[in-house]
Image (cartoon, rainbow, N blue to C red; front, side, top):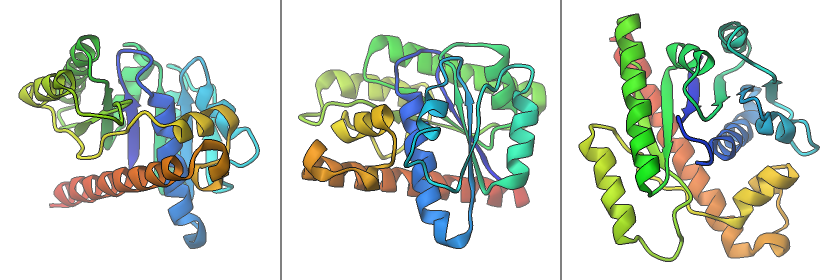
Length: 233
């Protein structure tokens, strides 16, 4: 079953938020089909594990917490056996655990915000993935995802760094995750976007967040189908 690794050599780009949103949406879609999603928290801060341990986490999400450089490969391999999708939330640095997880990935999502530091680190992560692929003598597919973009406008600065990523040869998801209160609410208080009380976080904001995450999830699934089809070919 496919393993999706959420990676960045820089902290604070929203890795945990994405891991939570993607895991909960895949679990929601698979609930009536008996599909399970494994969420592996390999970040020492264990924010994904904290969310998954609260009330409101979908019952078909299997949490593996405290994963580290000694256990992460075994954790991924066992998760692949029991779940249709495996999501790995990594720490925001280059480490043996990060390299090991990437070596087992079917798809790596590289997170990036519209800033110089983020663009530099995204390219660094992309190159690290390429080096891992050479060692393993296989392509490790990766796609960049821009996060925490202002909802108001697409600034000249954002466009500049978007183009920098593309010009570096990195593929980019069409979906961009906007800075939204519903994402913060889910991470802070538990549950999922679909369980939020619209009166607490704003009806429009909740609906837009749900639509945005659904669009991204469909993009991820399409990518995975293409990767699997290519591998079978």
